[in-house]
Length: 251
Image (cartoon, rainbow, N blue to C red; front, side, top):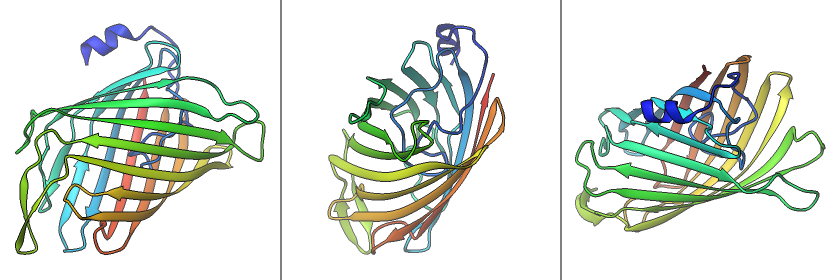
């Protein structure tokens, strides 16, 4: 964290309600990085209720910076509580995002994001990684207040394990994909609505999940944004529902 702080130039701190990040209201991301020079402390908290009645709460204290234009880096440590699967609690996560372009009349904004998970936590083996391709395109307004988004996420599990599930042994996937498509729009001067659909390969082989998510991001002051959201699972494998509450504070 100290290394990231040293990389970030001094600038006027400011959070932005329009800048979507996964885990803040919903899992949808936009193609734009945090502001150049911004330094931000983040705490997303997500409650998950599985189909079999298990509960899991995820806390991810994170430091994010914008050391270069169109670029952001972050380091976080996810922590889990509850009677659900807490594998990976205490891992160290490094993330980065690079935005290639601002959108044009017909061309969407494009970005790639990467993630590296170090196996420093609970019952975790091997270093896993992920990558996301992101598209964002404004609609209805030249000011970019209403936007469509698409995220294609690839995740690699370098040490898949065998897991007891429903009285049988099921192996974890080595590779899995997630597709998110959604909309975000400013509904009040300080509030942005997010709605999206998620289709994903779940960690265990043969399991697929779908969910509909809705979230709200509220600009509390120039330096603080608060987010909340809910996701409802569709089908037998997805979580029954998820609740999310998050705060971002620039400094």
